[in-house]
Length: 87
Image (cartoon, rainbow, N blue to C red; front, side):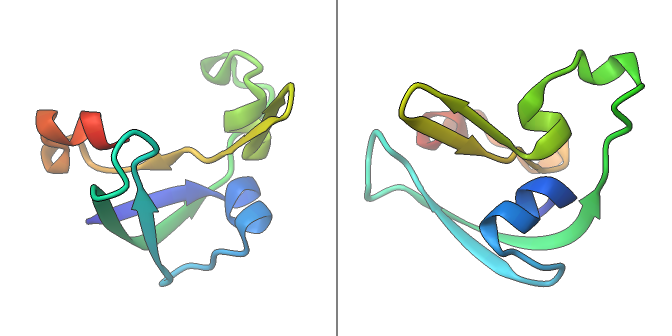
């Protein structure tokens, strides 16, 4: 599945354009999705679209002891409803 990623998240995870990434569900380790990174994007912090969200603006968000990196974005047409359970 092709995906894009913010520059901040890519930097935090050591991912480059063209890399392949395997993601595993935290709810079911047997569920995996393979992503091909086909684009990198950089959000404009002044744009209200991002609502000041640390995750989207920097690629990293820490809450307590948990750190989230991303988001990976995929075209709507490639997302199957059954895939949501694997996330």
